[in-house]
Image (cartoon, protein in one colour):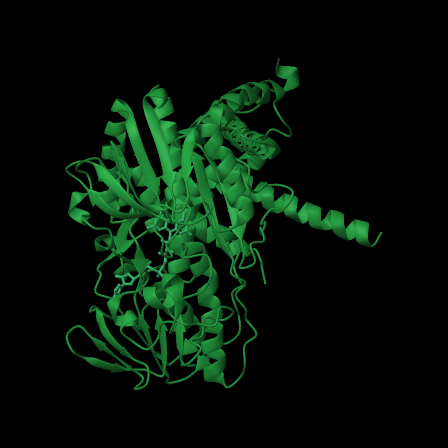
Length: 446
Length: 121
Ligand SMILES: Cc1cc2nc3c(=O)[nH]c(=O)nc-3n(C[C@H](O)[C@H](O)[C@H](O)COP(=O)(O)OP(=O)(O)OC[C@H]3O[C@@H](n4cnc5c(N)ncnc54)[C@H](O)[C@@H]3O)c2cc1C
């Protein structure tokens, strides 16, 4: 008995979970797991909590705080009426979904009892415990959660502008759902004609580091489906020295790219683009390199929004400082210098994951620490750096990749859904379960 | 700290199908199951000829379930990549087949009347 029985019971439980997921056509990955919703009674308080940014992280934080506090004043500040389900952009750019797939409204996720100030945050003053909105209104807080995401800095590439997406063979999945659609049309025209296709990522931190890899795989697949793969040359250019920050994943992608015939160039940083001549310029350690293209997918450099960059909140030095990411404790998302300020989602200056999957874990940890502070207790909630990425390797297959701060693979279904394996189940999950899980997260239900 | 909360499955399903379709489906499953047992009791057992034919319809139901899943996920049999994918295919087939069989048998028995008494044959 003992160990064996316990193990087979665990296997059985795992199997039951899998069957539940499989029958449902889900197989959800750790995106389904949560830190366990707390069923303790709500804490009574009159604390003022301000949340800057009502995207994935801000909305989730507001919903969870509304559940756990009674009487608190919770204020979301965000000018944007539309809510964008950004992981859906990749499916739009693959031609599988329409732009509307990624668009809903912010209002539908704002809980009753949560105030939404529909303005931008213009200034953050953590020494004065207040933020100033774009209309000049000053809003004081006891606790501040910054969740303003990552800003796309297309201007960081000389000659590039968002308005160029869809022209001169330029695509960019990131800019908006409509840009993702236009990118599909541009890529699709390339897949008919063939030629040289350039892909890559920026030198800065970026959200969903897997996205440009996925889009290269998708383009390869579409070329093959149309029988035109031999007419095209695909290049992936990265400023870094590897394809992915997690070595075991980088190696796997290297092998897959070799298999698909994607040529890889490291230490190549896209610095300029000449749309008229369809020429891209890359900075390399040995000088600049120019490459002519028929099609290019641009992932812009990313940084924190100006209000954060211009505040005392970013890291004081290093690349994270230059890009403006917030100096937070990577274990609990609390600011290292302003203990009543938290940074969650893409704006946080922590290693790895700027993903919605990380948001799912950042937020409850930060919320638990705020609730504990308010209740006069301490929280032992810790974030381990978990992030996940269903890395699409062709339309119909994906690899479920989950990892933590230490480059360890984390497995939601060990022994059942293999990581680093191209599987249909992982694709089915990406297509069916991810969006509903994400939306449930915004509502504080998952 | 990792837990799988079963209510999350329900919530995700509601989000996926929309509340109306979700509850309609749940109601459909409950009504079919209850009606199936009611028919069993009424007929004092299974009318095997009818059940075998229902099972044949069920096979189509299973195949349809797989085709439907592939259709909504823009994928096909060429995408089967590993053993777990076959488990998923089989599970989808089984769910579709069992559901359709029970539904076919139940509807047929309700509409088509009682199992004939052996001595009446
Ligand atoms: C193409 C693409 C593919 C992706 N794929 C995946 C994937 O497969 N899996 C995954 O987990 N993640 C993926 N992601 C990443 C995921 O979408 C983000 O990590 C997630 O949205 C981060 O949440 P956030 O709240 O930090 O930022 P966001 O959701 O971007 O929200 C930021 C909010 O801040 C607001 N804001 C901006 N400036 C101001 C201001 N001055 N004042 C007030 N509010 C402001 C914005 O309006 C916005 O609502 C992908 C992203 C992209 C772009």
